[in-house]
Length: 274
Image (tube, rainbow, N blue to C red):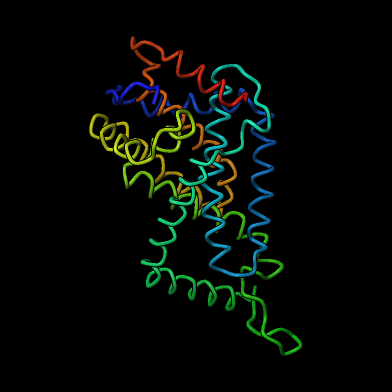
């Protein structure tokens, strides 16, 4: 893996990561908008799957893949290069990592079923009591579930379901010490087992910046709740770019006197152009 090991950064580095992530996204505003529109179309297609377990797993699979696409896009913006469509598609290692992330969150969701099921039941009661949904249609047949209903579905599913899943995915990566795993995989394609061991080392060296990232996720979760989840449309590209910038700072030493890993970046660029 052609990258520097983790290094200690300034305690307030996380605030600079936020500014830099926004700058990179704005530097590729047209690409960001186009890719985001494609991501939303994929999410919509996934939601049309009928079998709940497959739909849920596919949704969770799409989220890390979407984050990796925006990590790539941030890399191109950082180097002043114009991305080509085929250069944004994930490779085999990234697909494997995405499957692992989806399976982990799916397993945790199963373990939290005793908490989530009462919440789902409470939601059904709330929308029924407010007259937004009824379990029986006018013709006497059973009605579609609330999130499949014509009015509630388009309003709540894009934000509430996918926004909640995004926060869950990011929190799981952060909690398991794997915040840097996605950008490391995208940029350098390392074997996954040793790459997963690098994240906890970076955390131990930078507890304050990582606490800042945790705070950002908490703020994002609050904003998602206030917007019925619709801010996830902005959070997907933002957190993808944030992952890239934080990895660049901690592992590639781009914000200090450490030598810039030019060879590593050229290798990545050559790989994406082939």
